[in-house]
Length: 177
Image (cartoon, rainbow, N blue to C red; front, top):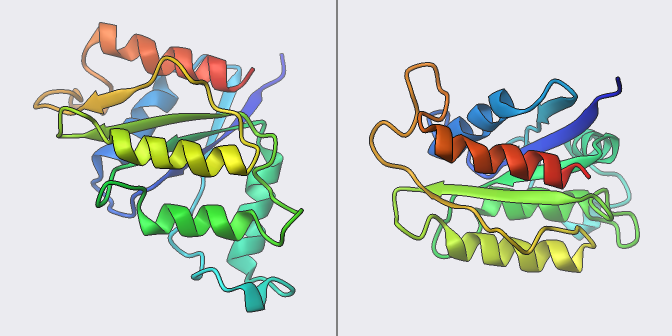
């Protein structure tokens, strides 16, 4: 049986980020035919068009990892009603130079977690707009705006509620097909 290789891009650098925890938890929900690689984006230098001809090694690595994946799952917080700068920077770096985007055609799922009841809805909308321009298909429905409350994660890092676990598992399967 072949494995579906899924790149996971977490839009937060914070080690104890709830979105990083969510990314780790969804990986545990996936069937064995899925393999996940969480991509490092914190070391990608700020995008500068002057460096497109000779990109930094970290940009080359990111583009290679995205290219090798069959699909992408973005797990992002919301900063100031949009995506975090580090995520936008990584997307920009791997999409350039024009016509050589590593993202093009990669199906993607989007998840976000927040302590807010709207669960980073604006960040997801902005991310969908960015990805649409880059030819990254994302499912329109259902959307996942996850509010993190006390005891959302169990002590092992799993999503505690069986009902809540169903949606990320569905999203993984849908994004990879």
